[in-house]
Length: 324
Image (cartoon, rainbow, N blue to C red; front, side, top):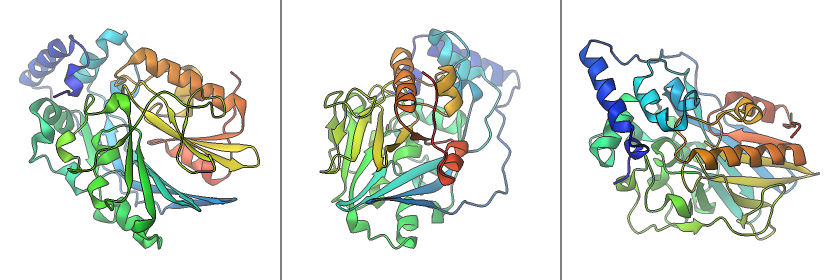
């Protein structure tokens, strides 16, 4: 079974060093809790398309997880040894309501995220999820409950595009109707580093998305979700081997790019700074180039999974534009 710790041959060395540090009394710090209430869903309506941004919980990671500051080969030991935690970052799920139905970009957290009685599928993943990640979740935040509160009939969920298969992006999948088609990057199936296949519902094999299909905007390949082609899956590999994004044509020459964890912020795109947890660093850098090309190509809302600043820009209608 693949785990985060299989990312590099140096990871084992890093793990030994981290355990040695703990033995010397250096405790893994806990990110400070915040009293910030759960934000209400953000809804924006465009011609023929409504976008709901749902806050499904919070995650905190090591700074070296979010930002690569060492050589590629040292990225996993750097995460293991890092004593700095990020602020609590939101975990967003995006619901795209189209005349043909509703598609979700990821499913977010659930009660399962806080329960490691299943050892997170294997001991290596258990170590990572219990020691290198922190989650906060309230039951009302689960995606199916939020959709119901918005008056959405869950039977209208046509499909779920999983940007990748880490727990904070997949754990609420079992709560969705069996009629919802899961889409997974071909490189992420049957597993990738940090994926939790033991939590994947049995009998729900995904539609695998390859790096093929026609160009969409500045992105060289895409796969249509809706028959009118306004909603398309786009490969943004690197964070995981088959990492996906979703791009929506909002009309009037505007687009929205739901980027998953291909970047944590606009600043990482403009500086071409990849995340330390990137499983395939060269691909992750190419994906940042593709995102930058799209932002230069057309007015585009960049919406990563964990960036409140991007959602704030989306809420006030400020598209993202950069010079390539």
